[in-house]
Amino acid sequence: MTADILLNLVGAMTFLGNYYMYYYLEVDKNGLAILATVGSIVNLLLLLPVGKIVDTRGRNFSITLGFLLGTLSQAIFVLAPPSSWLTLPILLLSTTIGSVAGVFYGLAYSSLRADLVPKEYRGRVYALWGLFPSFTWSLGALIGGWMYSNLGPTSPFVSSLLLRLLLSPLLLFWYRQLTCRVDKVIKSFEGS
Image (cartoon, rainbow, N blue to C red; front, top):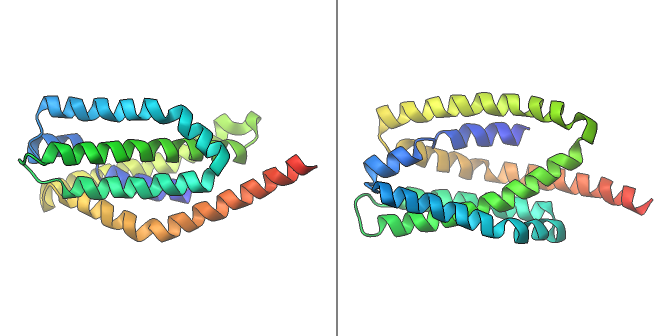
């Protein structure tokens, strides 16, 4: 849950992404539509194959890969130049990598959460798990909006990336510890 709280705070700082792309990077409405379409198509194409990878390679591999690709996607996004012939291709690369990251991270994390909580309690526990991350998302969005208005359009995106990079070792360590513990318990039940 601590990871959810931190990632929601840091991630929400970038909630003005479409606004930033339209007004600062000068990506037109068609470009925004192309980016959204590509992201959705990549997501749809990868759901089943990545689900199999999560089951065969494990959740730690998939969460780690998703997290690292998500960070790479954000770094590429930050590097996109305004008003350039390179802007849309760079954003397409960022979107594609971000979509791949989201599928890996999302499926593995959902699988992990399901194994942490007995079926009869999942609704209530998931609701409780969602309270603090939702609060921190709201706080992160507020911080990101303030930064955009007062420190410049790139500030929330660069700050979010820097915070994500700083938190990476800690978050990856937590994920590894959690997935290893859960997998060990599951294997002990399967062996008995």
